[in-house]
Image 1 (cartoon, rainbow, N blue to C red):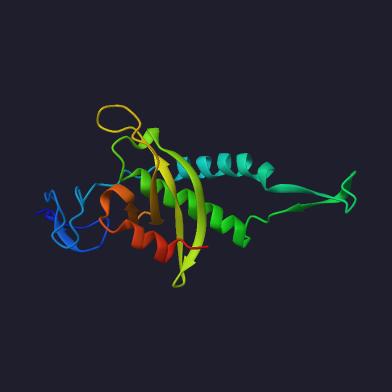
Image 2 (image 1 turned 90 degrees about the horizontal axis):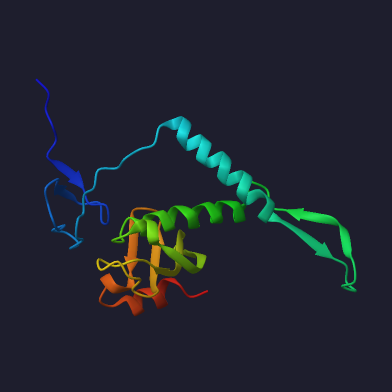
Length: 170
């Protein structure tokens, strides 16, 4: 006999909730449970390869000589396993987490995103604009995200200014 679990984890706080819950009883998150749709492994590798090929040229920065007249012969390349590369991947993953909390994820526009370490946790702070339920853009709002699990949007958190000032100071 096949047995199905009726419990799941809240995507925001990780608390145990019913799969049919409309609101998390622990943190108040609306729609706390969504089934993840995983891509096939080969598709994931194709996407990663395309992203690497697109990002690699942007990671090469040409140095200039002290006089500023002509470029120096050497170039500086950010290694794929470097700290900046890891931070860039974390920004992309966190932005995907922010998209999951928007009414129209495909319409998301990001700006001023930056990486910080808060209490030894990698965090992304920035601004996002997306279409609302009426189909129009609502204007940029600030966000704080740590991957997919922890995402705070300005319009969803009452004391967001305190969260922003605590975590997102450079």
